[in-house]
Image 1 (cartoon, one colour):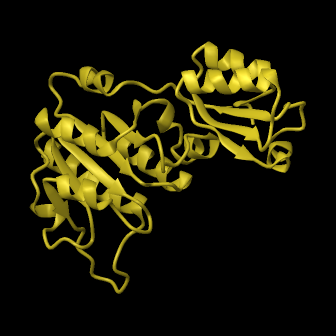
Image 2: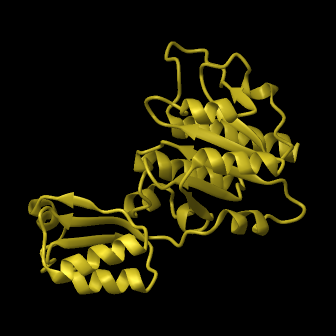
Length: 242
């Protein structure tokens, strides 16, 4: 993997240089002055790390890792304000928020549909989210290198902020009685997509202005999350260009 950095000094230099760190692994029980200095640096920069067996580090790299391996972000993240400022004046904002989507292929596929549908940005949580790695970028057909992505500590607080700024929050859920085609997407919209297994978290669902279901005719009750996102995104497109 070309986005791996290993060794105490190279990892410390990457953190000090402001490189975006996606994952940070430290060998369980690792001690010593240099390692302690690195941990202090990690705490100062408010980064999270996982303590793992040395075997995991050996699987990640054959190099002399000295008990630490960092995986850097493959894209440059932006602030939410950057996404909002970049929306052209003659376009209605459309943002996709990921609440617990952890499968990289689904994440990449949704990003691809979002970019094709003209969405202005993606919101992903810092925790419990698919990593933006090479597989995600491949699954997105490169869309993740084009569409702006912001990472947030609290999805609920971020969505509440957007709601106050005039966005409608639309939840995709097969449990709703209101159908997708009864919604009005001609206003600023955040489309919220939930986890593959349990859907949108209750706290986020409670916040949403609309809960919409895609009508189903067949025997299987729900679509894969990436297919559902595509269906909804292109209903937004249909309404806005119609």
